[in-house]
Length: 536
Image (tube, rainbow, N blue to C red; front, side, top):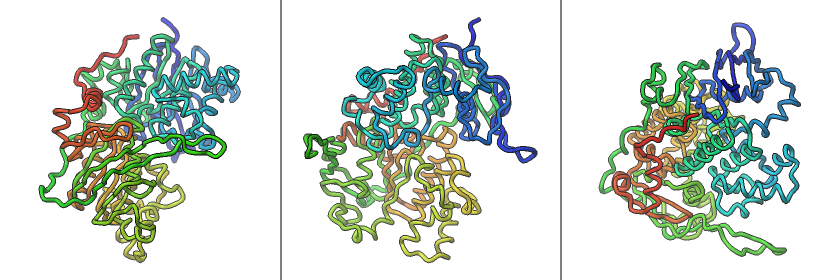
């Protein structure tokens, strides 16, 4: 029998000492062979990422580790920092869940990937650039030459994730630790990225430890699955066996947590709340000594639509298609041309002072709640900040914060705590409370469930449906998860390259898509025939 690429035995991770110590991972045991993808699944906080980070000792300094971690026959449990630096990014690649916090905001794409190649392979600038372009093309970035000088903030969430993946694959590692590598990617690109990893598995014998909450992708690409609950591996089996006959109650709970239901019925005479006419967001491409614009990135290109009161419009399309840019332009968070008429007011010509009274009716919930919630503010300050800006007195503010937390099913006593003390699902509930405390007419939900596991996704979907029924707000719902969109949206708009391809009632679009691109999206998201993972 060949030696496993990675073998973890009785791994436990402890924070603190004595009876008050927290033990988020308890005696976890797993192994991965060359050319195999092992999926580690479980709810947020179950210990998946800690287990993966322990391999390269990327844990907080106050963490203590027991057990054994063996890489290619070498016990690296107590390896020196020098030895770990030789392995990280070279023989072991890592893809982190949130690329915006993992990429250096001060360095270009070329410099960040080039640093990995220079450090471990000693490539000169010309050879490194050729390899970088090859990697960017491999992970699906269009016109990679134009992205070499881009900084992370100039890329979409999906493009940043692809840059992270390119960095992890740059040195052809023997083991790839992928922590939610497809979270920010649309369904077609998820297929491309995991197909790329599967190809590397076959050609190079790459071993992959995949952490994911997307069980459909796990089923299609992983050879084996380990299920974690509260720090313990409660079930481990080959993928086909686990999905066909799960043995543990928790595994059955995970497999049954699919988005369900439909949008709250819309009144046929609901008035128009928002309309856009020929809305356009073009970003100039400048070059030369005078930095003159020689071309434009047409992020949003002449889009016109209407949104009625209490209606939810789903915005879908691949990463970089213009979904978030469209929403930010409507909220006046990006410069745009055309018309945006909200509650009878054309927003684009208004000054900031003229816009301020309307701001309370325009709210947004961002994709990454940890990044959008200030770590230095308590929950009470975060949720009540908008009320303070609107001049609500302190006593009334506290009453409103307590009510908002109850509405998102959080104990009001948590208002004195800070964001780092909550799970991902709880942080997203706090972000929703912050948006709804002002009783807005329109809420933009930008991938609000993409970073959450399926059981929490299901809870958030049911919560949003309930809150919309109670408060009657309209939604622009941005997502690459078409199952979630189907459960929440009345209509769906399909975007590609900044243009609207079609905009139709949800079930009509799902049952009879009109555009070939829409058909490809639906085929990738809702395929009933699940290809078997390649045997090792």
